Length: 211
Image 1 (cartoon, rainbow, N blue to C red):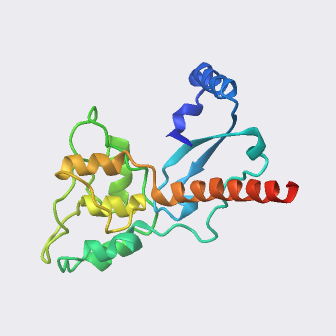
Image 2: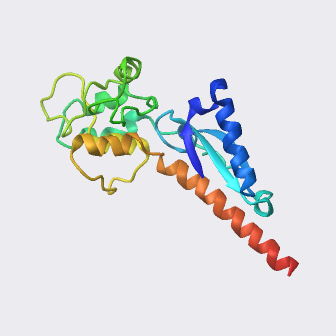
């Protein structure tokens, strides 16, 4: 299973895609490719990602892409209210009420980009509409008397990516944020992985029936 950004599907990458799929065919694999949106799997952000699955021909007929979640993804406000109010911020509930939408794609996880922030100007503007200061990442949740637009902590961004709260990220703020920003959302990865597991189980059942 391979994962890449949505731009992988752009026309200027057509030659690269053809070479990649030809390499898979030479190795005896059949490929499936699909654009998946993290918000369709319960993740509170857009984050479209291209997923490629390379399958053995005898298994490929048993593969199907995962179903989308039946319920809409939670909003940023509902996702983060607990963490945002961790230090008793008295405006946390009002902030959450105004952040009733999913977030833009988490970006800024590369060394080329620089320090820990929520991305270029367009991404920051989208976060600003949700009441989030995307210029930097905070060390802690807002204090009780904080006035202004709050920043997200690494743990908050990780929750928006779909990580469980007990997931450990190594290093200080910048290093930890890069790990989060570069990640493939765990709920989406689990959904695809479950589909692959189901494929193997169905293929095994067929083998037993034939035998």
